[in-house]
Image (cartoon, rainbow, N blue to C red):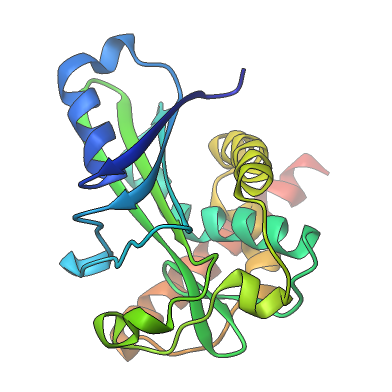
Length: 228
């Protein structure tokens, strides 16, 4: 089994559930996935609420990285790539990623990613990867959400079986996180560029991001020349 899987009817937050597990027994934990039917305190980036009615995917994954925190740069984008691959495999064209952590389709938000880390052990970054993915129609919650959004079933125009989708996500996450551990973000830059929604964040954030991408690419090119 790739992950130990925990499924709950309702949780305050799947990320917080795993963070609590880490605080109690990180040394005994294996790679773990937690799913909830609803969240009463779902979290988005920068402290925003993640509206979490029934029918969607609320998934958090625990992954211990043996590296420094700096090596995790680009992790949310790599997780986005994994989600995009699975969505494309299920027939959804035009999937895009908005830096640093959103899944978009035709200019509307379909999902988001929240990365949280703990450094309680030497040489290990205990990492929680939270994923929220809109599956069912949520027009009743449009005022709470407060931005343009779309669900996967609306985009595909047919029913989506979440169990199958979650299984595919976990398989893809396992493969891509193992690759990220070995190669870092540099190995994914070209694929990310094909998915980039080009929706601007602040100019300062994007300037920094561009510099880091260029540095990663230069390092990759240098390593390649050395190997040849």
